[in-house]
Image 1 (cartoon, one colour):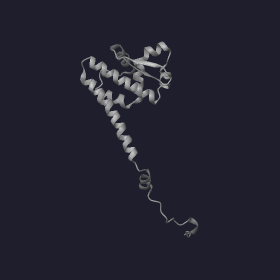
Image 2: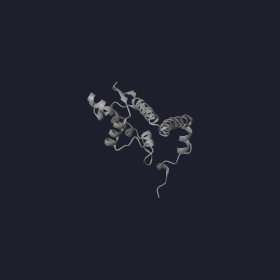
Image 3: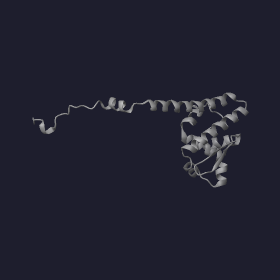
Image 4: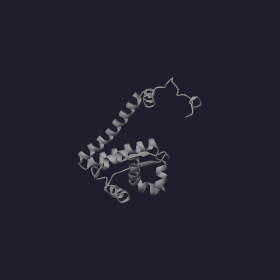
Length: 159
């Protein structure tokens, strides 16, 4: 069981069981037990589609949300960037634990690799942005400012 806190201060516990997987499949038509299925694979979609990730997490915590009287909309409203990152981390950790205990170390490794790939991609993009010379990029795009101005319309003879 892994926990995270949303932006409303509510703590949620993620537990992946067969019951929880069936609930996710029933509500979202997403089979968490087949991470490699689809094109792109479900694991990739969960790592790149924040809405799918949050919907999946809500389906996992739905019994808790129902008991607390929290709707899907209220849950989503409390899922800002930091809460999503915390939920994603808890979700991946819960997936890894589930598949390790199931004896599917291949899937546990795939989840770990997906998480590392996301982290590396973010780092690589940040490095590229930090290296950008914005002034040079603007000059390349717009051309260097010219001291030769085109003649004004008033000085152009009529034809």
